[in-house]
Length: 449
Length: 119
Image (tube, rainbow over all chains, first blue to last red; front, side, top):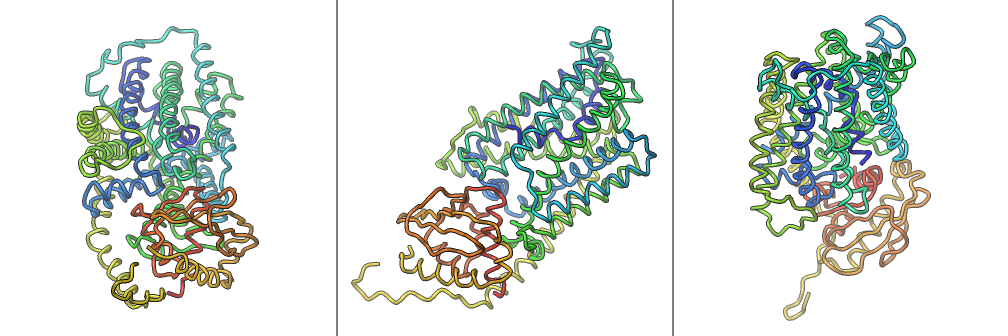
């Protein structure tokens, strides 16, 4: 449970929560988050069934490969991997900016913090440092508890009643509420990344139960934090890169600001640990499988795939610095929200398709009314992906769609043009390598095997 | 289905290559683990131990508490031990499954790859 909630509750969560406020009236954001939570439950059902069928870190490859053409599966998977780069970059940016603000340093110092954090993350990954399970649990529960306490205290201290807590449409159109829900889905995003740890769990059914509890917990914490921010922060503060620090200051003065700076830094522990391991091991596995160049499968003496780790660090650094220079973190939120909704729609499709293609495959967990819910999931998450991809802040903006289209185009180009060459080179290398296993002696007629 | 003798011969070759590989010794230094191999196509499985940077001989049956459990067909294990099969492909297709921590899973794959880097 803590792994699922910890991966979802990245530092970007605070910015997404603050951004969501603009779409609905007063302090009613919790309603959009509640609807998003129900949709996350729908996604939980799909991931629960698929992960139960394939309890392995390679699950996403397995269920997508069996549900659709492998080239399409690879394009979608590579595009989805963009989310991990974005979340790592976003967390580096947010933590760097929060620390720079807490120390009262000027803007450019945050760039140094960002670079320092990512270098630290890369180096610790290369040395094979793993965050122990109990540290991860402590970090997750600490972050969630601190956020709850700060949000509740800020609300109580304001001394004012909530504004329009039950009227999200007051002065807003229905379209705004849909945009808020799309952004709300992003607050739950990455809860499903826990499925990559399936092999570590002695009882795989614990994975989907943990995800369910994590969704509930995320709803409570995100709702309270969002309502507290909408209630006590003004528009200028909500659109800053560190609204959680300002919330902390409202609750407990300067000590609260420092506390939230520390909490923000701790969120990066889970994001960097989970994100780097998930992405680099996936790239390694895909390279070993022959779908990426062999260089991506190079290991250092600590059995760490160092090329993907370094590449991920460099990519995240570039994205984080660009965001820092352009102040375009809301764009990151929009791209992440759209990609997450897309992968939920894909999970719905895979659930439905595998019910037809592999009806007898063991399913420790089955979604009830799968045909209806899967179609519903495809339609709803597909629509939310489209909405999120053309919406930044509370205005229409096609840039997120352009970013996603560019990532998809690059993935497609790789899969259609480069991959056949990579596979052909691998096939000819293998053909030139003689088998070492001795041939079995021929069986004489009449002899059994 | 590979016979027990075929598996033993294949493993002996793998063990010799692995234990004689200086890079691999570095990679498994301090990584003392009990690994169970379960045969999905029937037959008795076996246990391997990694201790002090060395792979032990195969012990028939499942002995001790495993850190990692590897499940696959005897044919795939045999081919893997000879270096004729890339276990990652079988893993990514779901034909070989593992239960254990991500770091341990990576080490096992590392052993299977580094032992045959010359191929």
